[in-house]
Length: 269
Image (tube, rainbow, N blue to C red; front, side):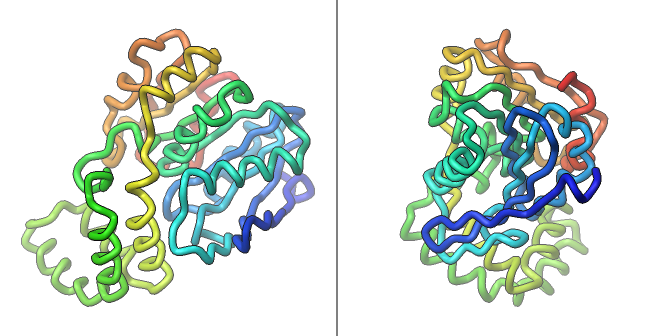
């Protein structure tokens, strides 16, 4: 993808500065959200696949990349407002959505809101359909989340203990890698804290999502990696159940990162 077809735009939204990278020459609008821990650059390998059908706006998540997020939390409404700002800026009424991992969760939350404006939905290893254990966090009271969020700022002190537990195989390798990566720096700890506070109120209403997909006849493509150790493969069946005509499940020979979205080559765009 030539740099002349890629430019940067900052959206101002109530003192939050949302960074977007815009690329492609297509007549249709595609709004894309990377996953937690990733930036707009995640989709760079996939841009040539999208360039002729779509003009793609890729959005850096709160506290990610070049997005400046001053609030201590984010909500579903924040993502709705970001999309509305893009629609106002582009003049589009209809559009499509692309999301990887947490970005997939963000996309799912917006389906009932923009219902009759949506054309295609692309989900890459999406979070939010099924989440094991603490990833759901909706059952944890808000006061407890606020109380424990302060611990995250000092969590780097736990790293030697986590390493010791990992050496004795008392914790899963994925848990150790998460702690090693996300607790080492202040910025990453701030990300963990914000998402811990926000995630419980950022839940996908799956029955409502499926009802919208069916009633509005939205085409949905969900990509799942055979080597993915984060998103369980059954989420494809869970989304597809009772709306089989609208949802296409694509199994890929990849892990969770989906080769930067190049798995989209497996369908006709």
